[in-house]
Image 1: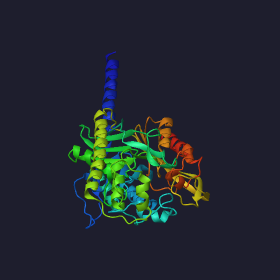
Image 2 (image 1 turned 180 degrees about the vertical axis):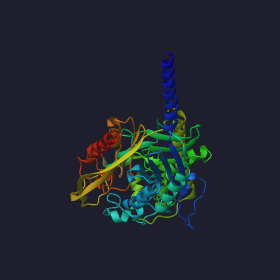
Image 3 (image 1 turned 90 degrees about the horizontal axis):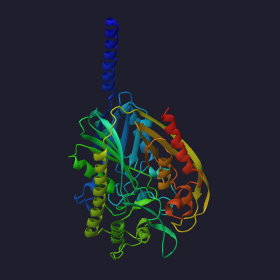
Image 4 (image 1 turned 180 degrees about the horizontal axis):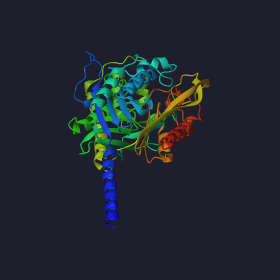
Length: 476
């Protein structure tokens, strides 16, 4: 009897010790983060004032390693991420990390003032509905393969800083964004203006990475709002994403890296655009009244080259930068609040990923009206949309390589089997679609809808179902 009890006690002790050993072994997540400056050389005629954090551009990277696989979350203060850039960079980063390309989520912050003084992707490479020119995928790849080396370097530095970590998820809210598809009360035509009754997702999604002792290592966060305040303003800026990320990083004495990614923001603008519109008025020679002016009337002459943009009044610029900075502070504070409230974390998350491409019927526009009236189209080439899902424990990052309307992002989250689902747009390349409106929005003659190369009735359901299929595959 004694031998039996002794044997039983030894067996229980062995199970207990094995349990401890297994728990310790399971805490295998390591995370590293880094940022690399990619600010272009200053224009001697218009040097940055240096007062605001968002006047510098960065590539930021977070690298994850759970012992059996690696992944990378990368954000760049750029307007777009052309397929040529993504194709080269993703292969080099996958080789650096020895991981599948599917494990890399790479996206721009979509700042409209990030390619040097006075430049933007729309000023250099006009798109349909923006200046009447035809969309050219080749034009979107100019300049050739920018900042690939800096992205690889950011990943390399993050990899060198891998340390034991755990991950947690939380959400907050911000009311800085607004639907931008509205009917002009004077002309009764569709235009770009705040539509407070339109669909809008106010969620700030936060993925926090911290050391076992609780010190933050990195944060990956999303919000759906176009960084257009500095569009054609004539100076380099990372706009509100850059201001927010630097605010977060400086709050933790630069011991943390904050990576921003765009949510479903295809129809979302800042609620407050008066300062940005006034900047365009200043450069276009339009008298500033003090009230909010119609954006399209002020922007169009400069955007379409009908007037030569002059210098920006320093006082107007100062107000614009203060607005960008204020948006960054408010969003940064919300991210920090959510980070503080995240108490449930995972030290051993499973990492898995998959990508797929869906194809929808395309159309080619044959007229040039900017907005307000139905467009004229003929059949065009099929549109290919790249989808991806990266699972990090109980969080799903669902990526689309285009500008997606808010309704599509909200529909995905409502139908997702993963409670903690984040949609990341403009990620992993650049679809040949232009904007991707939800099906109902095709009835609005906005510049996004008119410029879209998609025929209605395919993309919304195709994206949602395609991402749901990828999530289901990752759960098996």
